[in-house]
Amino acid sequence: MTLNGKTPNEVYYHRHAANAKPRIETRPKVKYSTPCAKPRMCIASKAGTKIKLHLELLEGRLYLPIIRVERI
Image 1 (cartoon, rainbow, N blue to C red):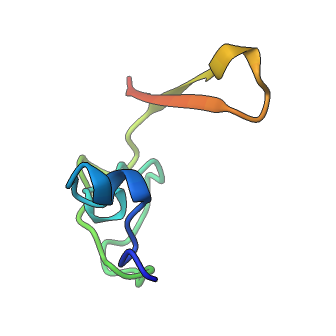
Image 2: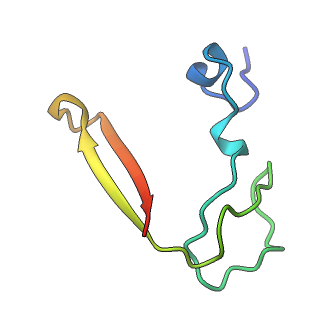
């Protein structure tokens, strides 16, 4: 059975697929016409955006990382 690129969580809670949301581009010299995997998404901000990654572990388990992305 296929979920059309969605996770079970997205299907169950009727959420939009994460791969269909605008992306944050950290490469400063990216070409907007560069082909990428489908679906092609727009960029949420200008190219070269700086980000900070926050890593936590769920209940201290190394195999259950929680990653948050923050624009700086």
